[in-house]
Structures are given as structure tokens and as C-alpha cells.
Length: 121
Image (tube, rainbow, N blue to C red; front, side, top):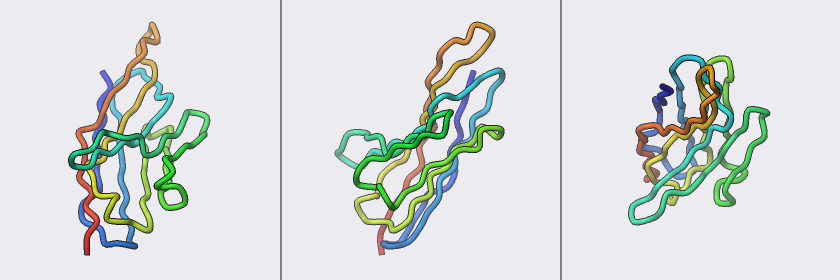
């Protein structure tokens, strides 16, 4: 069973930076796509950024040029570097991973527990 544990986040100032990490644990698994989602109060959860096994990345328009997603495949860890923070980036951020596990390459999708990012002066 694959599990995700997030770290990082907290309070950031407008124009500042914060970083998030997402460590996956389990046995005999491969993560295909790792993504970061966020949910602000009163809003739906949205995909912020994603990175594939091949290294392709995608971002929602509101964070392009400010956020950078990356992953360390051997360590099964993903990262989200958030620069030039804005108050509207305030949300609970969730890590998501989907891939295959076990002898039968069973598909899985798992979520992290979520971490709060607050951008305020």
C-alpha cells in the first residue's frame, strides 16, 4: 500500500517563497504522475502542478512562472517550490500520486494528508 507524507508549508509573506515535499512509501510501486492540488476555503480543489515519470510538467495558469514542480524518482519524493507568493495562494495543498504497484501492476491513486499554506503579511 502506497502512502504519501507531506511536509513544508506554513506561513509565507507576499512575494516570498515556500517549499513543499511529498514522500511516498510502500513496496514494489512505480509512480507515474505526481501532482499538487490545492483547496482554498469555499472553493473546489484544483490541480496546481503535475510531473510525469518522463519529466513532463504542467501548471495551472495562475502559478506559471512562480511555482516549480519536481521529483526525485529514486527517492520517490516530489517537491513544489513556490516563489513570488500571493495571498490568493493561501490554501490547503495536497500531494497526489498515481501509478502501479505489485506483481500485477495494479493501478493506484493516493493522496497526502494536506498541508496548510497561508500567504499574509
